[in-house]
Image (cartoon, rainbow, N blue to C red; front, side, top):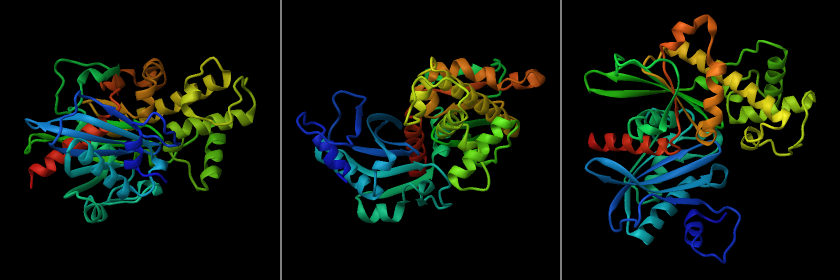
Length: 366
């Protein structure tokens, strides 16, 4: 596979064509040269991002972000080495410290993650085979908790619930991520350190309990597809869940299918409400996601707010804003649910901001 450095180098050539061109975005012009920067990475089930940050007066400013499909990465250590070398060769940017956020459970020592079997990320190998002096590996929703206060607050959209002026700013917060799967975390206030502390979780791995024939069909289809004994919420109330829902409804042949999609891409499905099958898939997804969100709220009681992040709200913010409250609200507990505000985070790089903020905290403690 063509490595990341070669791809980035060739990206400037208009005459060269290749299959897996990474996306590179710049946020300042010109890019400052001959400085030291911090690197953060946000590894997703479908797409991964790397951010290069300049630190000025303890504030992290995003200079460049690189985006690539996760299944195109291959050897993660090689990719990181290529990025570090590319930044130095093209901008004189020196990168000594990195924080990598990945889905799933990272080791307690923050030195390894297998990204649900998609990649193998090991800090010892990164330190041996790259010029990095620090390589911290943590859960992706753990760093999102650190990113909430680091991003532009205008990119946090209120969806539901009351916001009172008397709100205790130190109340528990909770996060769920609607991406390829579902991630979760809770955030509590440390009164001694005078800062919020994030606790990663895997609420998406809670077993799904079907309530009607259609949901039983979804659960059985998903179990058979993955070869598992149970269906988890992450299999249905997620991007991959949209694919599963569409597949089951298509097999049932009860809804007009004007598109006849071969590739059941969640983005295509959500972007085609005029198609009856896509519309029914979208409605059922939001019904399930609303139920999952409500269950998580009951489990955590985040009076400081439930924050929803991930690729689906990032890429379909209007659709999400229109549908979430309708399927989340429960008339039987209207008063109780209204006390907890729900927010949608539309900043796609919140994981990068959170990872670099956590990296700064770790470096300051050395």
